Image 1 (tube, protein in one colour):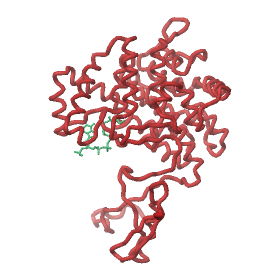
Image 2 (cartoon, rainbow, N blue to C red):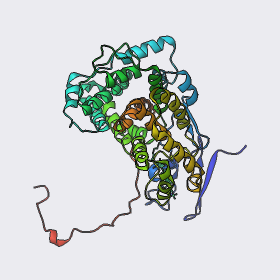
Image 3 (cartoon, rainbow, N blue to C red):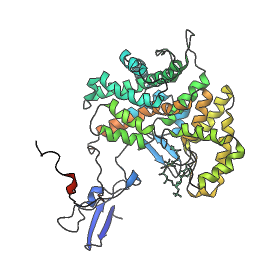
Image 4 (cartoon, rainbow, N blue to C red):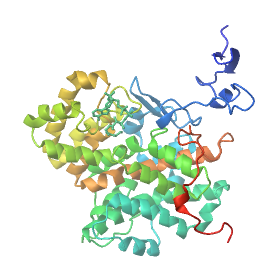
Length: 434
Ligand SMILES: CC(C)(COP(=O)(O)OP(=O)(O)OC[C@H]1O[C@@H](n2cnc3c(N)ncnc32)[C@H](O)[C@@H]1OP(=O)(O)O)[C@@H](O)C(=O)NCCC(=O)NCCS
């Protein structure tokens, strides 16, 4: 039987090394033994942007980017989107299994009883400038929650961890809705425990003077499915940030603030807002060929296209396209959809995109649906952050309980100046130790 090892020959020394292969990978630390002499630090692997480096073992999410497969804890995303609610999927991501009826009641009840934020946090949010971006308010407020729950620092206690996980999943829609209302100058709406997770979020966003907010069931379910699709995506930029920040053992509010900051960028969660801006710039189907030409010349990216992992159609984009039809039956169609569909059609036939395996990703259609539902583009990344909080927390917990994990501290290849002396002209400013 073939051996599960890799044989390496160092041509500098003619030495041969045999290193084990486990789960389709070699351990980078096994390279350290490869030296040219006793003074040599040992061989490292160089991998900017982690293009081919597994930083952990994980049981949360499986992606096969070539086949366009996405599964949470083994369940295909298509089945979860069809049969489950977001809170059931959140339970699955955090606990590893779908809940029983009894577990579900306890979980939903727990989440509902932690949706309120402290009045001082509400006051804190009221101090942001009237035109502050909701995503930036969210990032800052998540960090501020650390000041409200000082016991959250005790991350070694599983019960304490669980309480903060519930708090974060429960409070992120409340903070998101407050951030939105703040930007409009509207009074805050307190959570309503009669409503489901998504209905309550819609209530906190859009309730005006009516005594009870009633969400349109089609739109509430569409939002719930969008939350399921965005809940996790293995070692994406923000999950990696959650793990990296969390690895120095701050409380989860600070780690989640770091993760959400990573999500805010236009190459990650900020892309759906950029897609809408791009569709606005294109303005009409007749302008698409000229726009594509400029993309190919490298003037700008086609936002909502391409993915580090998917080199095939993003399975989430396929589900979102179906949701779009249901949403538009309620809201009326969004004229940008026509431009998006035509853009996709042209791009999928164009040699530039075909050769590079650039397909629509999750962000390509989500913004169009969000806009039809009444969300402003500034809220799109926030809508991504709400469900992704669950994924971040699942990764945070997995990282903390993984005995192999330590503080995340990569190596570097130093290519700067060799030892040199500060020039005479700088003189002596102060005696060392004075
Ligand atoms: C997602 C993304 C960051 C992945 O980047 P990556 O894995 O590092 O891929 P690369 O940047 O190496 O891209 C490979 C090639 O495709 C091109 N490319 C990638 N995405 C492109 C896009 N959206 N439009 C046009 N060209 C694109 C790159 O220019 C590069 O071309 P080259 O080989 O001629 O240099 C990138 O595709 C992107 O910026 N997309 C737009 C933003 C977006 O929608 N983000 C949401 C992700 S869910």
